[in-house]
Image (cartoon, rainbow, N blue to C red; front, side):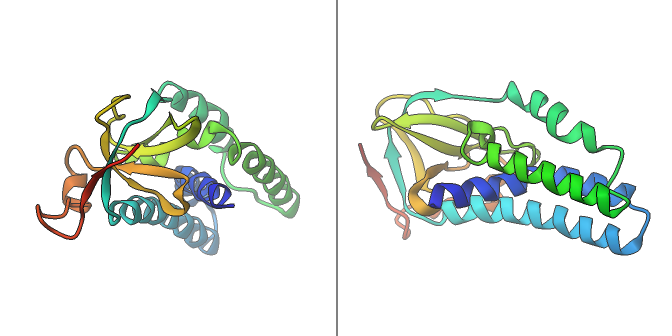
Length: 192
């Protein structure tokens, strides 16, 4: 259940750019406000997801087979965003068609590895990579993918224990999600 919740959040976050496109192309003020609110919510939730993981204690965790899915972002953009550049639906039938599309996309996105390809996180300077740990597939939100094998990388557990957040490795996020001072409340453990 926790993996489905995180997957749903990543799905909604990934469409923040689409909501901004819809807001720009909207003809009515109410529609524009709704789509800007959705775009803003997607960006804010992306930051919240990252910061929530970074508030937890860091541990050095070794991962196996880290795979970066950066090359799939272009395909994601073409497949999921370009069909909608024409703008938001203008009538009830168009709205229902979009609703069916997004329901099907959600059903495919959440259980698959499409959550790894998230344009909104890229805009914010982060990405999602996949790794295996103890023969289980895990997601890692990071600026730079961790190196596989020991001694491990400093990461914090993502909500529900379905993945990890790697500590910021470069600006501007070292300012937004600062590392706790040495000797502070965040301890670093070595885990296998």
